[in-house]
Length: 343
Image 1 (spheres, rainbow, N blue to C red):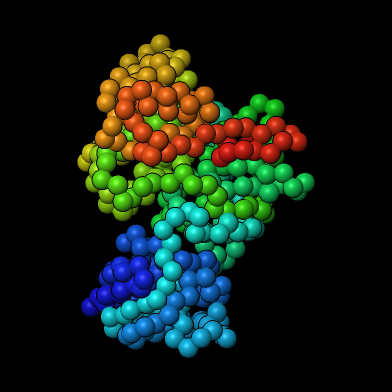
Image 2: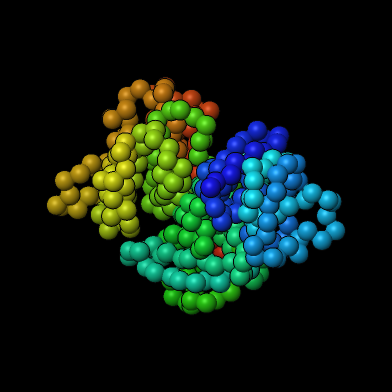
């Protein structure tokens, strides 16, 4: 038997299945309750139980010590009846505080000739609350920072996935490709940025990525699918040649399996046997959609691509309040990275 949980002042209601924690049920249904460790130690998820009964099957409630009567921990609590909670819901990136965290490089795998996949694990029991599309900073030993977009969706948060492109002359990416070993302990600051999906919109969605600009778009698209958002989605992914499309089978699978999803790869320096679209990615978008007034548009990649895409979209009727962008710049030694693709 499931129970209903109502929140104040957010006025949301969601169902919790037998044995499921309140937080797990909320996140599964897109309700933005706050959280940190998800194991009852940090207290970031604390709420006030206004009505109903609950239990803690795991018996770990250290973070309740010294808190007011009625405080509960949704990350551990399981309802025994319908509940009403007073809890500050998280609805925007500015409400999630960036944290300095240690992490371990759990796995690395080369995705193509110049893109490395990294999967980071936080300390035992820790989780990172973030919005699809946000990024993190690596904090280097000398204090410099290198920023990379988070490529996984928030519901899939056991590991943090990054796509790191090798930048010639970039000390950090040279280290990632040739020196960084699995199990290495790293420091990050996360989550950062305001590039995120507008889930309240009813507009069709266009995603335009260049190179590893695919990473945050991947997180957004997977989040939309997890949330069962059925608005049409069209992904344009621009690259030089076929080998630069480092995970081509993934959007191809989305196009086969998800109704309303369309994938268009675009090559600027196409292989001789390439039969798909060619040229610049924003030109392909403009050719397919001469009127963009009814769309939400997400652009991610090198600044020149994002700026060209923005201008092309504006020329076809798109307005700034329906265009969202994340322009990558690459840091050189001695200079900070200014967006989600540090060198």
